[in-house]
Length: 269
Image (tube, rainbow, N blue to C red; front, side, top):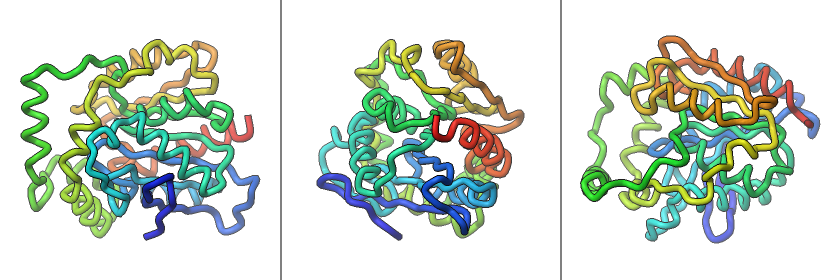
């Protein structure tokens, strides 16, 4: 798998696009969630390519074949955003729609805050409230316990169901990525996420909020509240009926259609 240099680390990435892609081809940069990797976007990337959209999915630190530094602070979403900026510079990607899923929405928010001139439009999918309070001592202890425990050898039925839009081979590879997560990754990603307070109304680009109404990880009302915080002249909302926390893996064909229309609509804005 290809790696891109991002400062002092390397990040795994996957790129797809139509056969006739050029510098004028609409581009989406895809950022995955907390325990996942860029493999989760595989079907979405295939469908985007078929729709004439180029895409680059990047694995954050600790995910897939990306570097795994020891310090938990390197796994904070703000740090991920700095890595993302460095990787995109190395790849020479200057203008794109940024798409974040779950924890990746926080990475995307940090990136837009610091590099809005590079972003045509923004997609925030199944993301937590960026103003969520710090964990209580009890929650910290639970997180530390989970961080030290390896994921089971085989995924749960619920996880399989919410990833049914991926090939069996990709599901197996993605689960291997999850099992290989370094424990400090979960600790470093925990709230609070300073610097995002009050930023939502200031986002200067058209922003699409996406969620599934069957999400059992981030309640759909959290996504809707986030949508209402955005500037009313630039906000958009799409809710998938019967879909859980992973539209990119459970309903990738439908999601890709939504993304392709949005990306093409605001490319070059």
